[in-house]
Image 1: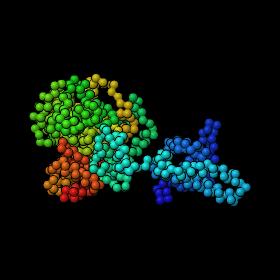
Image 2: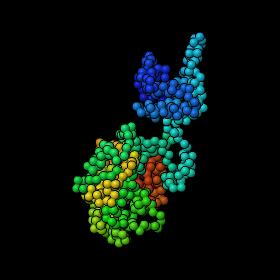
Image 3: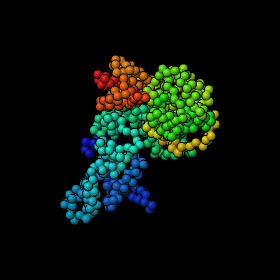
Image 4: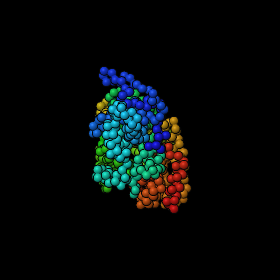
Length: 552
């Protein structure tokens, strides 16, 4: 405990904040505090420990930690304890109890005639000391509300497989990442090793950005209701989002939901309801979500040799394919007509391509001519991922009918959105009745508002454009024959290697070098470099140097 003492928050404290120094009124409420003679400037947690030791004396052993947690909840409702304070609180309580019995012994020897008064707390204090001594320090911290102890990676993987392995996707990398904390572009493992995160786009403004986490905590303290009640964060977020879209796009209606999958599912329901049609066009290896309908729009997850009759595929715009001919073929496959075309602006799952504006205009025009709606899936491409401006479609001068947002919107807090035009929303058969209990709750909306603030204040889209361009040029400049092509825009790079087997090995070796990247493309032969937007030039240099060593 002593080495950590300087890291604890300090303030002027009471110094002897025990039950004997409190006065209560007839209803048992605190009405006064006595004995300020022990006031001093020291660790805040020490004062909490003094109060807790007093409050727990005389409790049955099975009730000690339950009562302690209730007391700490009460304290935390006014001033939450920090993780380190909770971690050390058990030691501080033990130190207080040890001081009580030690001082009592010393005073009894000096004043034996007053032993009964001096030793009044000793028996209860000893019982508590024995209880705390019977537990490991980390168990005491956990019982008091601290973080749970970190299990060994191999043991945790075994437990994961037993409890979740039947359905959950396998762990990534030959040696799985065991994340215990994260900050900015770094993820920490239990042994203290830091991994450079060049993969995760969900924490778009960096892992645990203080403004976002504080916005979540602050609103959590105030309350989290639902969209049937008036709440400023929901309305403000909708207004802020609409203000970011091009004025001529006509996008004026927002519905907040919980995930990108839910957003795309709702976009499909809207399109099918408005058009009366039942077919969809997506790119060849697209991913749009995990709900029952969104999965039908996600060839990346289809079982081998299986294609839903309601979904037709086209090659990724930007891949060099004849898009017009591919559209003719795709539309001819849809017996129930076209309800919607879905396009992920980053073409992430297809292998990361940059479409030409003429291709997207063609796609939009042909979609409308076939009676369908054009859905711009900005879940992965949006929030400045592809450079200047928040939304990828805006750079092409097109006006989608529906825009879907997800993953990065709350920087890790579940929140997503469907944005469309009022005239389409009002033609939806469920207009005025669409609802999500958690969609747009004030905590989620506060997180998303903080993300928009950080993107603007720290100019992250502009920074992403600059850092990403330099990163792709540096990788292409390595001159390695294994690198077939480097694609992407903004802070997104798709590094196509000569085979999927090689790409898998390189991703694993980068992990051993302390750098995380992913794989994408139909053959998984493309390294997916998609870091938080706070990724800087020095981080890019580390990645490029490691890739150079591995390919050599």
